[in-house]
Image (cartoon, rainbow, N blue to C red; front, top):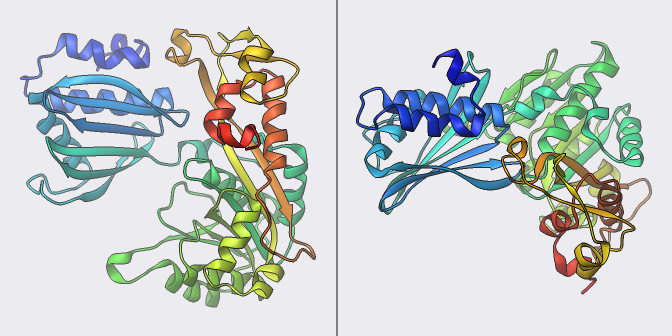
Length: 398
């Protein structure tokens, strides 16, 4: 691609390519995939979906957590485009009846991409996950934009010599980014004086001075097995990519009880849910109570673009149950790809576990609502975005 093509706005590159190169051209699939990866990187997309339909290959991308349409390719181009992705990811191009997973590591584009293919009615689906872009760009906890109270609590517990710091939320809530920022913070605090290791699935970003390892299920190296072995290597801080099962949770919390600082993530809706879920999967109450130091629950909300306009509070906020003094609503411009939003911010709540007995309690999320309200009144996000992320029914208190 020449320099003039590189200056075209990211969302227009693929349209420009389609207008200039025939899909029947032998180089089309190669050029299209190169342009697609560059476009996704420059736009900050986290995922790209290529879905075969009866008459087209539908390409969509996830911008700031929301799936958006990107372009439609003629049906005849679908096989070659997916095949090109499979070649780059080291997958079997002739195998179309079974799902496959692979990776593209492109040093020129500074990209690592997980490629998953899946057989569907009209051909093979392909989903690309752009790994670690946000994790590489965040070097400190302060850059996360966490509420001050949450930031202070994390900073305090990362100085500890034992216990577990648990970052929770649903899929796509930025848990891994926060956990990586905690890991880098621990590295900076120690100045090389602590043994820090990680076990991840997958490794999403390299962190200097951290001994990072990745599970490999094909050879029997799973998370629980890896953690048991890792504990024999004299680690002081352990980063676990995610707790997904009881076996991993047991080993992680045992490490936290016996002299290691553990930083990890877990799928849960809020702090209360996280603690209760650990108990429900079979972790003893005493282990949860004594091992956990702090639980951080978070969500990502889209930030309004500069094209945002002041909104009527009664119409846009109070009518959907959000009590704020002022608000803004999204506009549309080329800078935000006509979505009204650019980038994302965190809303979060925290629960210190010091002396707290984990018992079932109604989910309150009061801190999440307070954090969301502050962002709405500051013009950072819109009331409708809060509804999208936290749900209308809970805002209304029903």
